[in-house]
Image (cartoon, rainbow, N blue to C red; front, top):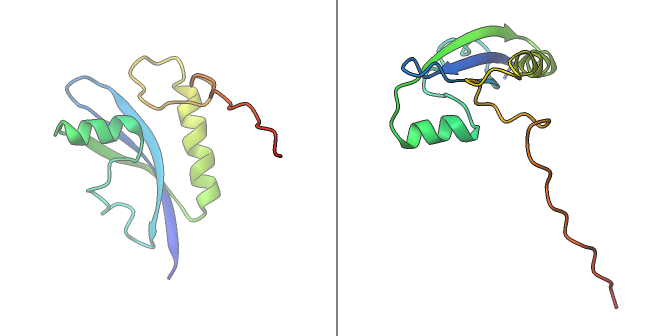
Length: 104
């Protein structure tokens, strides 16, 4: 079955906070995928708190790579916006690495 990807923006209309993401669905279902609001930390928290969110489809793409590139570019453009709830890799704290254990 053919698939297509889309880039979306999920917004909390009360606070203005938003999340940008991308998703791949069967062809023709991008604009009717109304129950999905994102897989990031913030959308999941809002769902648990039963906060009403609004989702808009920004662009439908025929290739997943194009959707991911647009998603990353849009997140980068919003990097300094305090309302943006995406956790960008350049803002995330560094992961702690476990020391290597000697075998033997």
